[in-house]
Image 1 (tube, rainbow, N blue to C red):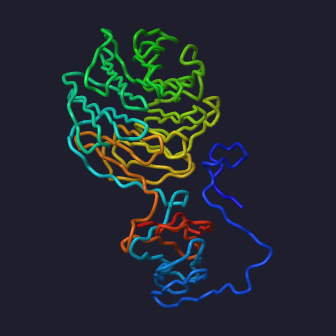
Image 2 (cartoon, rainbow, N blue to C red):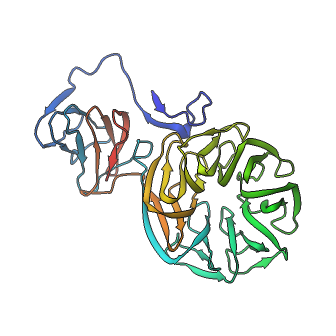
Image 3 (cartoon, rainbow, N blue to C red):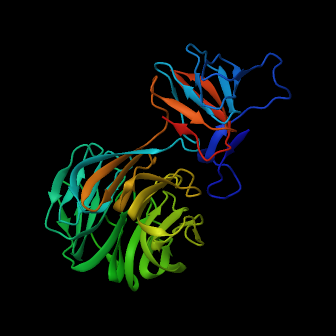
Length: 425
């Protein structure tokens, strides 16, 4: 039996939506052993179920030498819940568990008032633009940064999946293009109020929006540009991996969607002060943020939209390639992230004037920027910390079954959650 969140609402659990697999038989084995634990600590044996039945947390340590296929199960009966502790070299995978994909943020140098960030599909190559005029690139997932351009009023950046093609827009200036990861640059000689840019995965198809101007598209890696649609107060634009599906938001008017590489545009959603946008790789799932409004999501290539958050002062937004892992910035608040396609959200990182975020294709590597501060590198958790410092906790009514798969790794095979999330360490 497979369980999970039907995030794209197509009535089928796609492979990427399955979060747990359980196996059922007509009757439980007669020799299944259940242990009622009322003490603060206990050592778990393989193929045994435990009832954590104490007023305080019950710490249950994993079997030290399990065989592949062995399992343990724990249920929180008492008010104290439970914590599964680990031995040296052990860890528990948490992908798909509610609360299991929390993000850790680390401040990096340099500091600035960051207006735009982007990254390659693997998250190794990154680009960041500052309001003070500098444009930086990194080739080691943000550990070190190199100044590439200075003296420009940057408004937006985009990067191809391999990180070689970088498109950067200047508000009141030109579009700057690099095809070698930021080492060399050219510009198109334009002078427009550029507000946003986006790139296809291969860097061939590019799109740029100008405030009170038009949408401009290129099908030859920036060699030539064609004006599309009417003059509008364009604010944001994003594109699918092949560039076919594009979404563009206006300041005080509607969202517009194109499904023909930006040639024609159709008004969608209601008039809002749209700020940021993001697209899944196939373009089916789209996101858009509203300044002092909600985050809106479409699961049908932009045809219909629904609000999926409460009203906040939303800024930039980024998504993984499958549209499941999302991170969004708020001005004066926290960063918020979702691991279920925007169904549920949790705050992450400290409050601040966050402006911009970027995500790798798998959603595990993130980059965030805010005003007057460092760049922040984000890492999304996929397991507990390896060894004795790692653990996984649940509350009263929470049930979790783990199976040993070898190499020190335990994998969740079923769970029942009475509280909001599990807590990994």
